[in-house]
Length: 265
Image 1 (cartoon, rainbow, N blue to C red):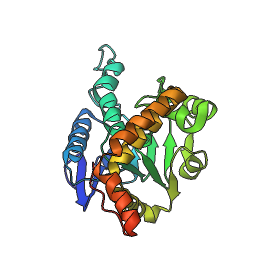
Image 2 (image 1 turned 60 degrees about the vertical axis):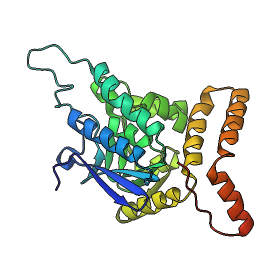
Image 3 (image 1 turned 90 degrees about the vertical axis):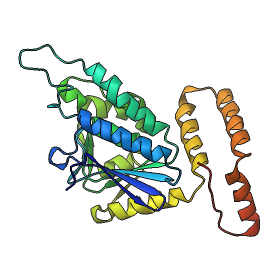
Image 4 (image 1 turned 45 degrees about the vertical axis):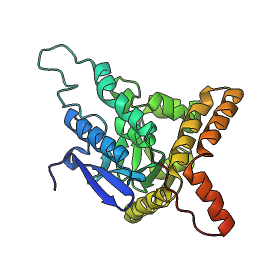
């Protein structure tokens, strides 16, 4: 196994990033944060990358923050660490990078996704989970509130009542139930997770990814703006996208009854 904390592989237009601390269920340390952000920035800057898959090595996706990491573990006899500083320095930039990523991001959740790991997955555009996977908002069990965007994501995905239940009780949510309540896109058989994620990412990579990224941004903003503002934003986006290559190509391909070749990013 590589010593890298984040493994990278590329298959055509799809880049896959794999969290690689399997003995610790891929829980976050400062070092893993640094490697993940560097890998995300490299993928964002690579014009050949048109879709991204995020997954975990071993039997878990990500167990959240490693509580033994010096960033959060108090020294013996010392004052408690400022957890807000850790959130601001590491998790906030990570969430904002994913939510503004220039291409679609697929999470392939291969096992437990707990705490920050659960919300890391939910920050991705489409979440596929193995049938044996589970999601746990574990924060209340150690006296904290959901972070890594959890307070923003959960009510938008499943409504206030379910969001409060998940956040306050911290119960394990099986992948099938996560799909049923709309927390994730789809639950699949364990053996087919990698293939399903690769196929989904390949499909997205062939689509007009600039328009897909704009769609993500518009939908994320929608609940907090008025209808009038949403309509104005739609007009602004259509004005920009309508001048781009992909719209012209899409219309030409439709008229010629051929498959389009999208290029914008």
